[in-house]
Length: 453
Image (cartoon, rainbow, N blue to C red; front, side):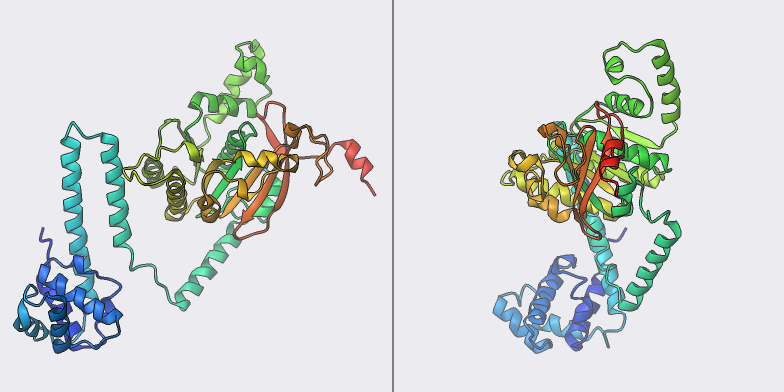
């Protein structure tokens, strides 16, 4: 395959030399390094510098600029520049020519990159994990380069797309829920469900119930016919299966976990297992998963129509190994959240990212968390479309929740601390003692009678 188009490179530069309107048409599509011929790289670098500086461009001014840069002879001399301007009559088709030059550049970069990866893969002294990370980075770069000119839309197109999206929302809305249902009515009312293209952060201190809440979301989504990919970095898949079994049955959690289940419970477990087996949930419990692995895995599942939602448990355990030794932990977490957000937009699915809160939240009145307590990076709050903070007041030895007035036994609070496209506030949910079951909260009868009008 021919990976160069020098004649088209000449046509592009020639058009820019003879018409002032030519360079603006390609200035945001091409960079000097995209030209195959080194002489063309030097001339185009000169042209773009002059354009950005607001200078007039013609054969004489470009020649003088190259002299000033000390690149005239290396660029072929004054005669070569004059020849370039004589090879075209106008800037017609210059954008199409630029597209071909851009594609040739991507082909060359792909060949160079994959040859390097092949050499690294065959080198037994190289860590294969590093090679795989390089492969993901290469693909990310090439894909980013290949689509950079496709995102600009005029207002007519944008308005048409916005109306179509609104019509789709109306068509699929069920009682105001336009996204994937959470299994909690009040939370669905506040968020409209988990929305495609959004990154949802669920954060809490250890043992508050992040994983339990995430598994509840997964089961609710799967029960609604949505395929869910769960990446569990903290717990083995079998332990997640235990939790789903206990959530969907009446088995005693203590007896099940301690091998004391009676015959009736074992029989119920088999029945429940058969029902859960039909749910479209896929679990990856590799403890050293990176965001690159999550992306490639989710993309593969999406291509098979097996991924409508991703859950990652949890952010701070993601493998953030990097060759950039000067990058600190906060920068690594920021990069991971950006990749999670990019994944949500790329696959047009909700990505639920679990995260730790720092210890400072425990010093707040009642231990009630807030956005500032997200651990290790402000980028989590910045990149997230929705941030939910989990809080169980009974863990703080509080008997009555101050904000709601509800008794705290079996009470959980989802603090919707940020919602880019909706309101914030508290949502209350109920749970059993072992936190294996989560459900809509119903205040006890005594409370209802006390507060009845």
